[in-house]
Length: 394
Image (cartoon, rainbow, N blue to C red; front, side, top):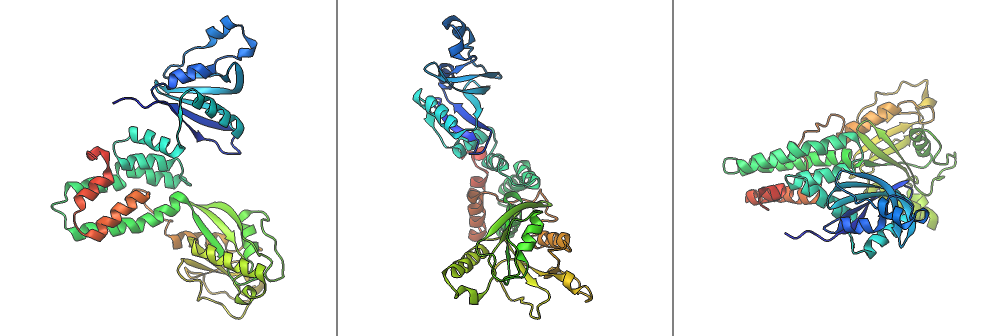
């Protein structure tokens, strides 16, 4: 099979990154690199010295030098020679410099490729099956250490082992048993997703119940304006933090109040945004003022909810009932009950005692295949082979 002509892709680096990584791969990658990489500044050397410092990059080498274009230095770089056809160029993270270097490489014949495709192909070439390749790619974006462990466990155990063992015993296993296993995998995968990707938690509730104070307590600093006036928060404010195995984004929203929605256009829009956030979150912290006579436990619906009864420090002479999975008593102002609230969140989302070796799906491709096995209740040999991928001749 003929080798692919050189492709170039930016695989690391964002707008604020100090260092960016550019991959150059393909049959003529080394030839292109030799044309633009110099070990010393060409402006400071004679032609003879320049020829001596144009050392050819070879596999296993790490070279320091400059990317040049027609004798002009673009940037100082470090080049990692990972193989005869693969080179990593590490340059300064300024997007303009990155764009110029990519442009120079393209002008020499390389083709621009998106980072996800490049990284997946690289993982696939180093993997025994598609699940392993997908796990290696997903590990690079995992939000938590435990998420990384879950993905790592799917390579030699977890989903790979389940698929291979089930495929090997396909004629002796009852199809209903396979369906039950698929249902279990899909259920556990939702919990694994929360650990791998992180969760979005919306802080909702009536106006002036202490939602912004709670957000500030979680952030450890003031992120949201706090006021005694109802409806102070009209837009949403978010912070991110870690809670054990979870990476969580907490979002403070405008208080849910139907009367405010009819007040004016700004209030109506704030209520609409709150409703949209509630529809797209993983869990709702429904905060209420414990000093109020009426405690609302009827909403919101359709999402896991932890009811947070705030301002319990104002009821110091009153014996509070025990907290449980349905309600947690806290004082956001004084920091009372915050750890209990965090543990209640973890328990509600099912992540506290999750076994990293559990078979789970973690890509849409895998999810569709396992869902089809569950739905069809038969003809699963081909689907299981598809799930494993090219190790099995696909």
